[in-house]
Image 1 (cartoon, rainbow over the protein chains, first blue to last red):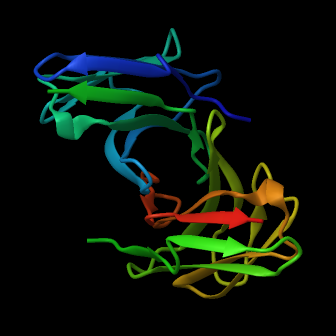
Image 2: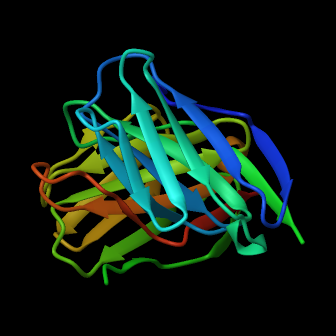
Length: 110
Length: 114
């Protein structure tokens, strides 16, 4: 019952460029979260946006949420090599079990 | 900081062995989760637990069982390991379900079943 689907599956950019990845989902949500996973490690929470919010910022991260289109985007500005990782969106419906997408793999080269 | 510790980073087992994956969290979280992660399939929920001795099946519970005898510890058990259970296993925890459900993950256990 996966709900979030990230797009693109993979993204390669140069340091200093912006990276945008998108997430679509299918049913109503309470909130949407983004996580990062460095290679071979666990996931780390980045940012959460509630269903009544449209945009949220955290440092170089900007998340938008469009509930009418059931989509969210994560923008990383001025990317660095250290941003190389996989990024997952996760949706929280009524319960405690998040539903994760398959992720976008971001590669930032110097 | 919340710490979720998985007992092994890498594990190699034989087909048919009984395998225990251990997870401990130090923040008195009520909810704990086990996921497996496979290329192209993302994270899939195996089991989760709301409280001590309570467990709920996730999306792919077949071939797995869990144990939560203490609040801080959540064990995933492969009763008879099979090669299709070769995967990355991730444990996570979150406080009461009335919070925002931000999950805190361990570093993962990469299990190979030969």
